[in-house]
Amino acid sequence: MLGRKVLYYDSDEAACLMAQRAIVAAGCEATVVHDAAAVADLDLAAHDIVVLTTDEAAASHHETIFDRAGALFPRTRLVLHACQQDHQCVEWMAQRSALSHVIAKRDEPLDAMELTVTIAKLRRGDHFGLDKYLPWGVDTHRIGVRDSRDKAQYVREASALVNRLGCSERVVELVETVVDELSTNAIFNAPQDASGRPRYAHLSRREAVALEEREVAELIYAIDGSYFAVAQRDPFGALTRETVVTYLDRCLDQAPDQQPGAGGAGMGLFRAYRALSKLIFNIRPGVMTEVIGLIDLRQPIKHFKMQPKSLHFFVEEAQP
Amino acid sequence: MNHAGPFGDRDVFSVERHEAEGVKHLRLAGVIDEFSDLSFLSHLQGDVVVHLGEVRRINSFGVRLWIDGVRAIPAECNVVYVDVPVPLVEQMNMIREFFGRGRVETFLAPMACNSCGRTETVRYRVDDCLRADSVSLESRCSACDAEMELDDIEEQFLAFLKDF
Image (cartoon, rainbow over all chains, first blue to last red; front, side, top):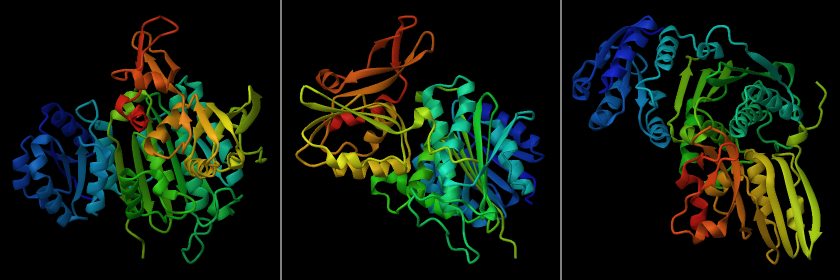
């Protein structure tokens, strides 16, 4: 569990006000700073979480703050409130293992709910659960992911919910893409044998794979009117932050037809990432992985594509 | 759960064939994924028009199968792709060789009405786009006749035109 002291920097005063409230709402104490140079001079070690808005005013201080906060990891966690396009943020993540949280700065000065949830999850160490991203009362749907031959059924059930909302065909396609790729990942990539070796990753995705009871994953999805939210939880905890960041960084760099590997795990993950507004990985190493994705339903596709994406890794310490 | 086959009705990948005036026409529909049989591509001969307007989606493994299939089309075969749907336009923009040696004649673009918010898919000819001084897709809303605009980032969605 982390302490309660949160440092937030943004040159935008409206964002600072929202951040102060969001931080207090998460049960923390907020130090809010408008001046990027002042952040670079502050004692970061006195804070448990440092949230840095990567705006133009802070550009010349990025590296210094990344380095100083990175040196304090894991005692102090760094969260970016990012104005940049996705590639830049993923590149930063690839270069710095201490950076695991990017909250995208979209139209609003700040996504206050995402900041509250991120801080609360970090502070409490309570990472898992789609419910953290949904208002109370929203109906969630659950499917056991058991068999590769049933994947289309999983996709169909999730897309039926979006269809009932009257979403456009393109939004339906985004949802289907995410569920398709996450289900494939749960069936072929996640399962491991007792010695930690992948069980089905070497198989062609055309092969019929029926998971054993201990391997069954769970797909949970819901809509709150603003977001389609989906979580895929597998009982292995084999996915690592490094694997995901490497895949995304490489895919953002080059064309998908140049990706190696028989099954295309990296490409599937990349396609899911592209289809989402927010992508969150909750990992309890060796025990459980939960991949959460949210698609903002409120925007035209054009707008959706222009917006940066949030990306988070909440990794629990391995149990002895 | 009974394994009801990999697809729902509108997701079933299918290929319909017919011939008109010496030209073979193939009409593809559904979702291109790991279960899609694209082996017919390696057997194509002569002039072939491939209609893609009813392809709803393609997944990551479908992209691999498609690229392999297109690469296997015999060199002497003259393939024209028509009504390339939005999901395949997006792939074409990411993967230069997505349609191999084939020629894209028409594509479908997602248009949104500025007035009533209706979205429609509108067909455009590649040649018309290439002839224009500056490419800007135009159409009128079928519901309120207001101007519609591309519901995508224009320079990304139309990036494939640079390769023609």
